[in-house]
Image (cartoon, rainbow, N blue to C red; front, side, top):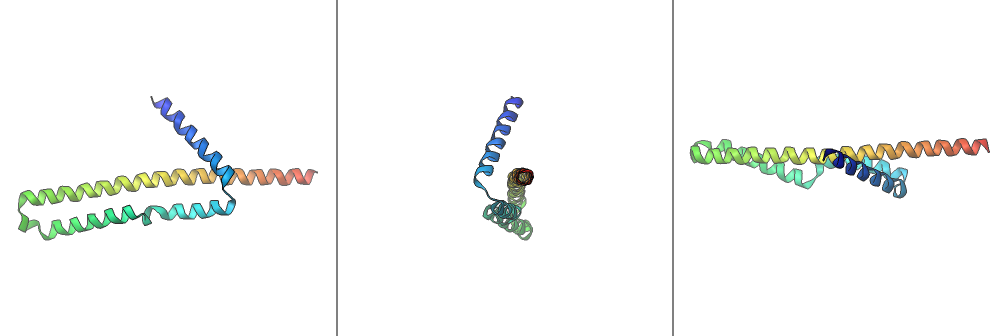
Length: 125
């Protein structure tokens, strides 16, 4: 099972490499690299989840004594659940961005090697 998953991941990576090689210029690659580094923090879902977490956290500490033990446990559970969701979403996005950056680095290095090889061939002619 693991071997098949690794094989499919490798084929997806190769497909992405082919796409980038065909479609993306050097300036677009640099622009995509800069956008990818900022994408985690500016994602609207992350902002919404962090806002809900902060609201629940404040409600938990402000209304802890008024609500009673049962409702304060429910509010604490909701707060921790939203914290877990934030962490999961953050690391998934971060993994995708790291994978994207890795592919961009490979494409950039291959384009540089291609240009250097082309220059050396032109000099030899």
